[in-house]
Length: 177
Image 1 (cartoon, rainbow, N blue to C red):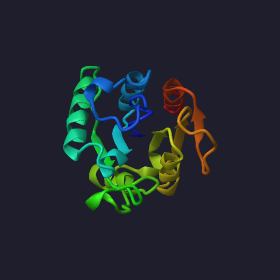
Image 2: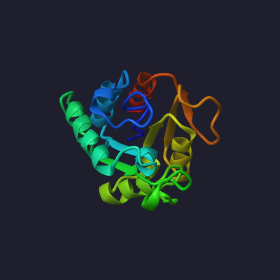
Image 3: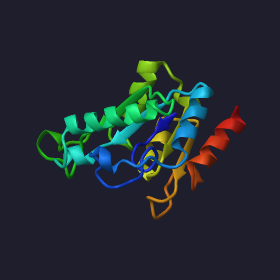
């Protein structure tokens, strides 16, 4: 299962980079436990424009993710991987100002997980809160994409199921067996 970070794992606060600003989204612990119990890998795939824009460093991001992984581990959740894209083609600064296949809606992070974990993208699920998450999931041929409502104001193109809460995704996983 692919999880976007901001807006899915943690509440969207805009360029999150400090541990004291982390608030986990309601239902993320239960969703992750259920998904792992059903045999899904738990892989975070996140665009990090804040690195590109120079708001924080890759080291800051990695420190935050170490903290978040420890907090999730304390809840019995082990992430298999965290992939991030520090580039932005328009707003990036210096070496970070460029397009990259990893930047969603690109499929680079999904394909990397496919290679590194020998997973089937056709059997995989994406949970995101932005149209770029849906577009990446559709372009990579994922089985199912969920759009958690709240961040996007309009409709996204492509194939997806809307959800207002992570519990809806969890119930879908259980029903699929």
